Image (cartoon, rainbow, N blue to C red; front, top):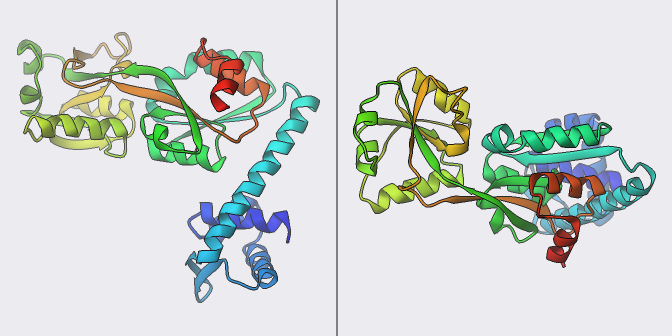
Length: 305
């Protein structure tokens, strides 16, 4: 059995059982990946994957256990490499952050700028996705740090620490009737076409719940994962927009009007998530403290214990 074979198994699973995509991600040939999986199965005397002809269609019951063990072995190998790098390449390495568009656009930039100035030889990568994708990337080890709202706090494999609370605002074109019809209410919002976040975002589920509790059905005409997209379509006159209050910039968005909606919805909490079994480089702790000044290495290690 080879570590290479375990890497191939893991990547095939990550790529939705698509060997072609896995081989591309691994920078090797499709036939080479297939051959190594075949050799592994012959050595184990069982099938890891279910097949329909040459196409993989699922993971066998013993295969599911093998996949979990392979992921564990490869994570520990990664941890061993990081220990070595920590003592031989103190200020070099990689930092992978998984987060949503709103966090990467409005929350992360100050910390990212300071970090890159302090660690110019660390390659920083930001992966954007919905909250479930963010949590999955950290849980699988694809990302070192995950920053998103609420969903990530439900993963047992992750240590999650609250970053801050936020609420919502309503944006409208200039001169919209709502601007002269205050105070703002759910009933008034429901009268107009609404543009807001995609339902894959946990905050959207909360918004729907609030409307449901009030016995109202919002007239959602368009959803997006990107606050800037929401603002663009509001500017075009396609509806009013409900988005995170941090996503409205009084200067850059001066062509739009904003109404505070925090009295209509409970606040949401953004969390920072880490794998409980990951070895973190010193610069990862420094990055976290740039985001959350009160959260130092000592506090994180205490929470992990």
